[in-house]
Amino acid sequence: MTDSEIYYHGTKADLKVGDLIEPGYASNYGSRKYGNFVYLAATLEAAIWGAELAIGDGRGRIYIVEPTGSIEDDPNLTNKRFPGNPTKSYRSRDPFRIVGEVMDWQGHSPERLKEMHDHLEKLKQQGIEAIEE
Image 1 (cartoon, one colour):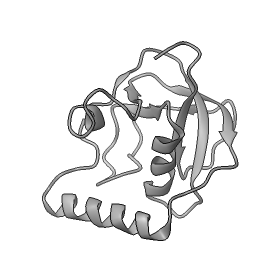
Image 2 (image 1 turned 180 degrees about the horizontal axis):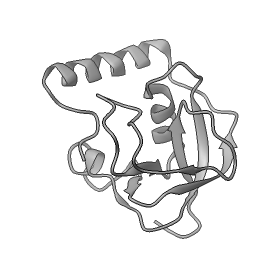
Image 3 (image 1 turned 120 degrees about the horizontal axis):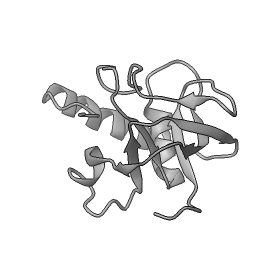
Image 4 (image 1 turned 90 degrees about the vertical axis):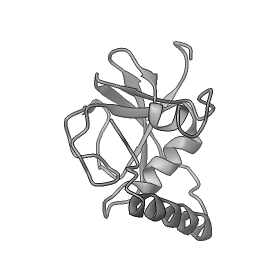
């Protein structure tokens, strides 16, 4: 991770440049527990998944964000699924400031999205939350 790295946040929330994304709100995923952290990624691919899988009726959005405090590896991915953090997924207890929006991004195919939703449903039936804090 470097200071010049670009960070993204995928969601369905309709926000604008200058807004803060803060902990303490209902999660975009799982049982919608109130989050102690906010999440960001340094890869567009991870943000695309975030935008596509977020709960809500709006269109997926990918914001370019800057952390206002320290960030750490996201243990929901790094410890459980991807050792070494190849997805460059992070979390923080401090807000992120929106500095832009990626307008031209390509989502996954309907078949790939169905595979992921089916996988997440299987995990849910096993009592595994998408995000564990």
